[in-house]
Image (cartoon, rainbow, N blue to C red; front, side, top):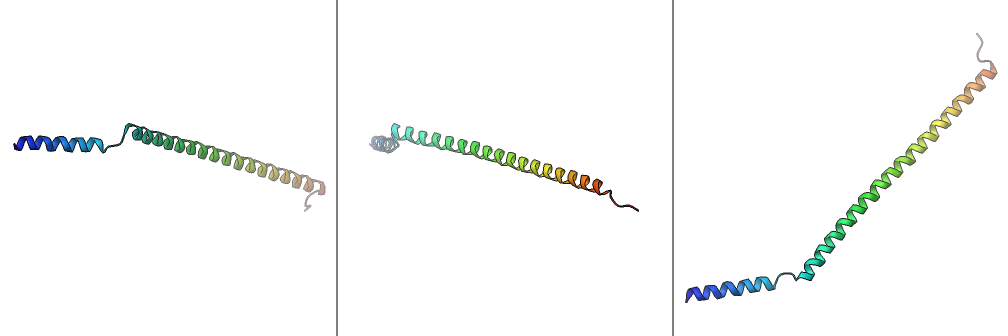
Length: 89
């Protein structure tokens, strides 16, 4: 009698456990949400990397323009000094 009651109790608990779990649709929806989340993170990483590359390119262009302006200024200064004749001792 105790064995029969134990078997019935185990069967009832197993049935309750299985019936309370998520359905196949819920599991697929959860999996799809997880894949969407992973895709969003990957896109954010790519966008971030592209933004960093664009910022680095912008900084390089600004630095190049500054070097060209400095070089032009130096050349103009040298040309102006040579026209004046420079200092005579």
